[in-house]
Image (cartoon, rainbow, N blue to C red):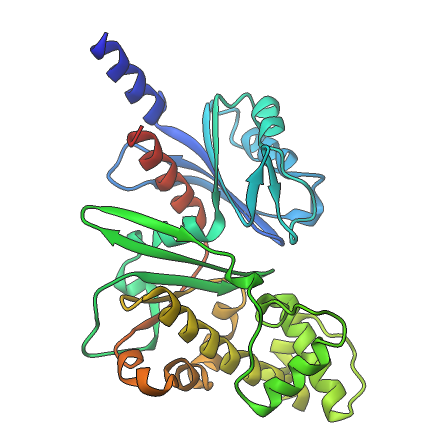
Length: 338
């Protein structure tokens, strides 16, 4: 009886062909992969990135991916997605369609499909990151030990905390992007004052995200008396980096500084003395600008806590396949723990 139960658990954890389906779903892109599960760490065997708005739902994306994979049989899957599952439906403000886990299980014939928060998956995957795969934003000669916070602006702003726990890892998922935005400079106060005209609650991601950068640019145009053209995040970053528009340049400078302040707050709130990983779709595109910005100064500018903050490293990672690998790794560990 015990042997049969052990064999059943092994089959649940380890797919017969060693492959499982894993996806990282954001408001703009869905990243999908077939992941090899037999090695010490999950390894990507096939990967593709889809633009969410071009498909009627996540099920359609996953069906297309499996069809392109020549019908490789999979019975297990993990989806990393912003938001939470309530009655098997994902609650999220940034997705273009509803996500029903029950419907996806039925459509794809998956015996086992689990959901994990997208930044929980990325935080989980940071343990696979090697030193040469990161860009140091804030370095320190005397790093501390402790929890690590992973945060990044994309379609929204996500954050999670990786907490060491002996030989295992605990991931604390958060909704930091929905917390109230606070201001620490005169221009930030002016921006926040204008945003509060239209809403009693202005969440952090209303400024510190891709769409947030557009909101920030529009507010600064109003403050500076310039007609707003409602530029996209890509247009703003391009105009700023190429010094083609003064307000765009100011917007990106304010964005980086404000992000540094918020990330520093997260370190203090969660005791993340082990460091920070910055992810998200925007930051790799503005890496050089970020390095020259006021991000680090604002990150460390925490009064009496500055000495502590100067010993907390901040590294930028490419989002890429990390969320997919993290979803797979999280799923396997969840199953092993049962």
